[in-house]
Length: 65
Image (cartoon, rainbow, N blue to C red; front, side, top):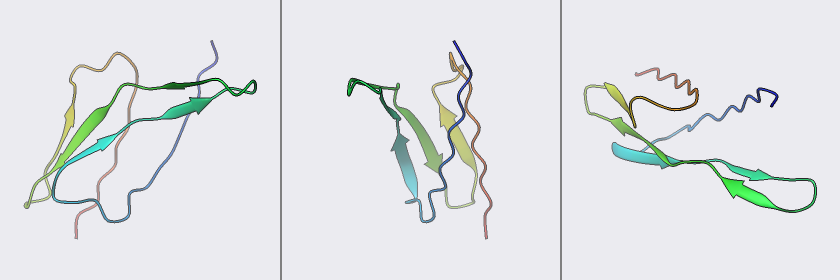
């Protein structure tokens, strides 16, 4: 299996918990969803990622004000 990379910038995430997942669409029209992950944005700009540990690889970059 070849490693794939995906990028997404959530410009205005809500305070609290935000949920994300990928939808992979195959050339034949079939599709599959990734596991859902959640990212908690706290008022002091801390970031928590769930679940931990992940089975795959995830990179999240957060730049506070």
